[in-house]
Image (cartoon, rainbow over all chains, first blue to last red; front, side):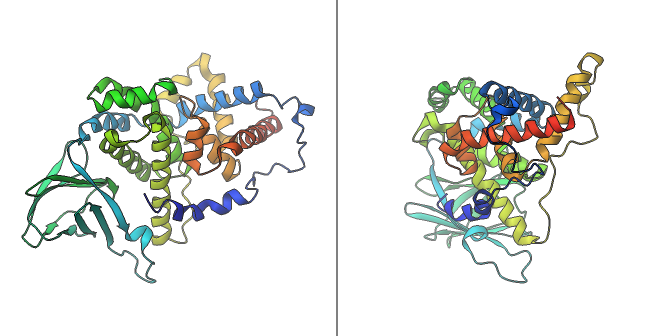
Length: 183
Length: 191
């Protein structure tokens, strides 16, 4: 998550400017006491009203609760995590005219890294330093597609991940799991 | 779930306590979903971000340095992933307007239908009016209030992590935004 600061610019301008483009005049008295609305309790009531509205009109979808409950099985206390250290989405300069560039990702753990390229065709990658490995493509708590990396560490998967995915690598010595990512 | 329980629940979940995990999911899902919606993600993108965030939380459970700040961890991860979605969609479709998908739909969900029973009709109408006026607030207010209104009210630390704004600015901004919302409602004679 080292690039988090790089993203601030996206919304930075919204927070620098007034942003209150809501048709209510800025001349509105700031001492809300005049209209009887300066009060914590009144603010709290209105916030509660919004909370009730959100619970009815935009609640957490039920199936998402279920998926998050099941995610408990994704605890991998013994595996090492390979963190995302390069993501073309945020770290590469966009190429003009290329509408659907492949997503290039690098995950790194101490002494081991995995390069992955995701296209609409599927997923290709290489374990570095080159070595054989058994690889599972995880796409949620219950599904995994097993692959094998050849002795140069290369592997391919014919289907692109649908939704969030992670790779679980079993090398001779250990288990490494990549950080979960939305493809 | 009380926010002061978060640290203990995380530690119990690390030890394999499924009930603790369930309490965390129930207690903090509304925050994650609110942050997704504050960024105006579509249903499809929002579902994927929500899942990515919870999968990553499960994966990192034993490694979270400050378990009592798990809510802020979730809020900040959700923000980060939401901004990535916005960034990728801007790259692919630079001219597209942000999708306005959390508008009140004309189709009634089961929850709304319950509200439409006769006794609840007035409440239903008020909720719709509040929501409609909320949706038409400026972007900064809409975003802040969408996070604040999560079931199980988030802490200001969590709001700060969710939106990348200073903790100290949240209180004044909140009051200003709620006052604006109140003014809009009063102007329509809604409440």
